[in-house]
Image 1 (cartoon, rainbow, N blue to C red):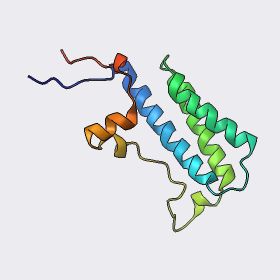
Image 2: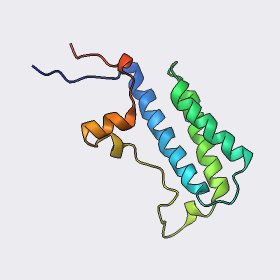
Image 3: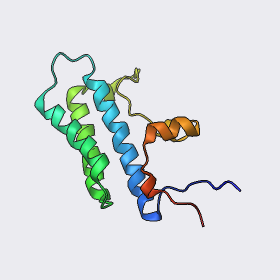
Length: 124
């Protein structure tokens, strides 16, 4: 009998969702700087801090992740302030919907997500 793996404990679920939201916001910020001649140190710091938050937040500090999401979105708004007011959005700076990843083929999803096997356990 084949058993499916379950990878998140209950307390991890909300944190994982917030990390997905942060990742989607970081993708939008990266899209906002695409084609820019120079990237300010401030923007670089926000991106690095956001990426660091997604891989080091093992204490499930949801408030810290939410704060980082707001910081990333504020930096994107600073870079492309007119995008949020555009009557016909092009989608260039839209946040990536991580559900596209999670709903993908299992093999593709596994390769992209890189979920640590140490967090996974077989269901009871």
